[in-house]
Length: 328
View 1 (cartoon, rainbow, N blue to C red):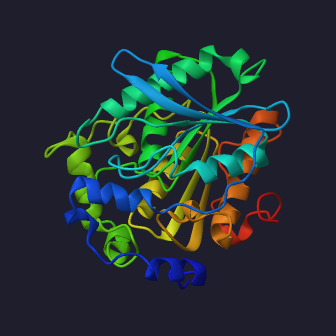
View 2: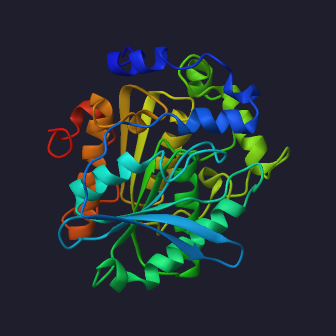
């Protein structure tokens, strides 16, 4: 399938400078500038700090207009080196309204100044805070889903697995949006086909991993590469979204299939015509709106327990996703 026309226009307007060669300040400025102008109104937004053993972690809480049905803890993407509360503000607002849930965004510490496992520690501190503050959030029986995009998807699923092992709190599901699940393996088909010319490049990923995990990371450490984990059974319901023209496509889909093989109820959707980061383009972009609808509907089902817990779900193309919700 060809590149989606709306996405192709946005891609053509981006700077041709190779991001992997930029100083960290310029790299972050470029990553942080790609935000949607859309700002959906929600019931309330509040910025707070969660205190951990190592630092104070900024968070942003979004409440819907009515009583929330659940809580979505969201970790932003940005290659572990960029992203902020502001870069994904529009995504959090859209999901808060459409899924009628509290959304909590986390501004974890960034590499290279704070390499692995600093971000993971920050995210774990926020999850612990959420579990113990259901009353403050307006939730009688907190149903918590954890998720994120790209690097945030990596942090989310590593944290969910760790919480299951330690029996820390109740996690109802995880949403992984074109997640990083492995160290860069340039021989993968999606790296070969999509490693240049579609925004995120192979060289970008090599630089991001070097900044985050060092020159010689343990490639079999599931805290870095969750697709390498041998203990996936028992993880909660999972939604995995991938993009056709994304170098990370294959590792995200491999992770989804490994979850299915482990008996984890898993929904995998590939968005044909899309590139890495397309959901951040905002609901004015057709495929982004479609993905946000799917995420919000999936969250609503987890919060209401409407969805049957089948161990294997059909792998779907984006064209098969329902049209109710955001952008309809």
